[in-house]
Length: 214
Image 1 (cartoon, one colour):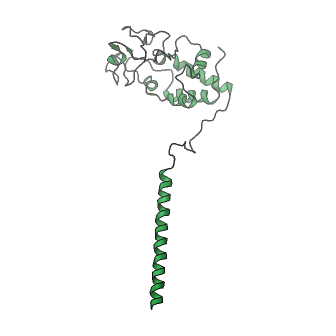
Image 2 (cartoon, rainbow, N blue to C red):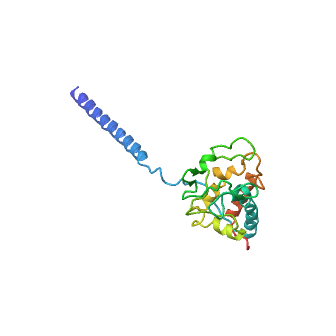
Image 3 (cartoon, rainbow, N blue to C red):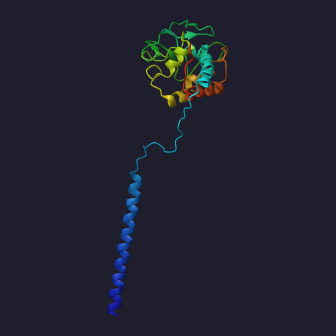
């Protein structure tokens, strides 16, 4: 009887040790997950594949160029520090200035007239929550640029706002870019739909971003 009690005591002790070990292993597993680096790049993220094709690339850029030279794009990418206005791209009648951040100067800020949405009525100020010109240190001029000059500028990080190919592709869906296809009553749209422009834009970039010869 005494031997049986001792045996049971020994068996109970082993069970306790086993139970403690299970708890410790569970804690180690939980800590391992907690310490896992969630900031590592996602392994399965789709990579941008560039297959160089100068013919297809130049053909795509010619479509892109037509859009960028339209008033809806070029008016906010002037060669000077005054934005352009209207379908004829004349100097803005209110004579606003670019300013350091591209948002105007002193009391004449872009947002004073350009509200978060289009103002109702024909030829009234178009709107966007982030309406502005490119900043003074990165003017990103479209006006007067040849297809060759603009293509080279668009892929140069020192002139395009420090954008790589991934950011350039994403820029096609930027809020101000999209605003070009929602300019308000009385203004012409770009020469092709946004979907067509985006397709040409991505094709140009993913086939080598070649510049036309001129």
